[in-house]
Image (tube, helix red, strand yellow):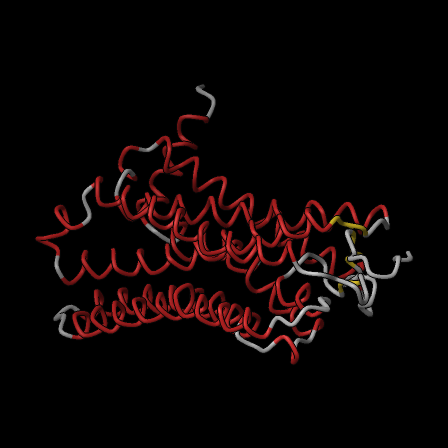
Length: 311
């Protein structure tokens, strides 16, 4: 493709998979993980919807988390699959910016939801008598609206700015989807001031939720260690540890991707990090947060019993 002098690119090529040593293997593994993620989250949403015992604040936010996880999958992998199978890697600037806006909005919302979920567990374990008041339905809805609206507004500013930049160098994005640092690196406009805005957004979207999560789980840990029951202590510690592992994978990969200066951006490293933000957490979340839970297992058994043919 050629570009006239003095004009900006309006189309880009997503060639990240092409440059891998074994693109077919990578594609197959990631696609399988995406399928498992969609299956697990769909099942979880179905169970929460049909079983009244799961209509609690914890599962309300879990349903939000599942929607965000499925959103990440649908935003990234259909386009990646079509590009890989048809070997047509082009994407318009508007499509690229839309993908950035949607993935970052879902990711930011997920970060906030993880913080709210940790707070929910803190209230349930450390302040159980106040739980019905602090986590009543009205509060949960207000927090949900706040999460979605604040994430959308924060990322909208970024999307509008990225759309207005000039791209007069290469139009090749060495990634399997449009990612903010990858697109900024192709701009011939000075983005140093904008990168400072992004770092501020990172504090709000990544580091503030991390602070809430760590504070909540430290308080939970203190409470758990004071338990007399050894079995209850081990169970609570095991649950908290599994939650923290998934949170660490998601937020750790986000930190490595979005806090690194654009000048130090590495497409190969970023593609690996992207797998750990877009597909690994969605695949693990239903199992870690829910399908190991006795309430969810009980709801699943009810569904099997109802579906079992009568003799």
